[in-house]
Image (cartoon, rainbow, N blue to C red; front, side, top):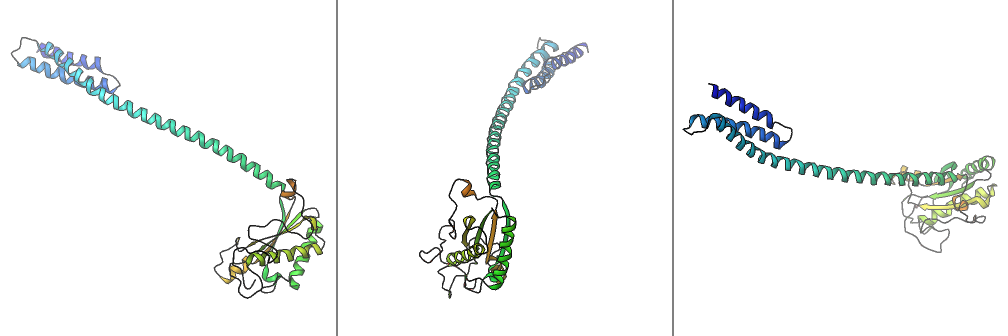
Length: 281
């Protein structure tokens, strides 16, 4: 009975001595407990000359060694996993830092763009449908169109006498078939010039006026119905606080001339841009 108590006490002591936090230590503890138990039982039941305690010690040492080997394997795997996770975290951190730098650069770019736009801040913008300004297929202003443009010119002279005025001509996407125009570029340009020249006749500064056309390429709505096409056929008058091109040191345009337009746009019939246009603009 005493021998069994001694063996039990030995197993407990071995367990306490080898208990730890790492996988190796935990497996050593388990191996020592199992080994001591098996060794003690083996010594007790065999005809060997060793005592139960000696058998438990031998079994505990053997079990602890075996447990340590297994624990080392788990520790190695855990270490590898931790190293991989650490490497991934370092990679994520580097990417996050790069993204922060990119966002900083983008923020600075946007700040610069805001300042640039402030220099050419829009003070007024008026849109008039081409159906009001012109008869079908024509660049000659209607009486109603002249009336509305006269009101706009009066406001520009009264409120923004030193501002820059730009007239944009827009068409729908219908190809021209019966009118004299080559395409939408030419029609949009002729109409924007007609509006600009009328504003100048009403007293708007010719040195601060310009005309441009976008043809069919900047619709406000898809050209999928007659009503939508009507909305896209329009003239837009934009009044800016300062002209960006002049602000950059470029000479203001001479009276009655137009500023550079998108590729393909033209004022006369000398060149040809992309075919397409509106037969009833």
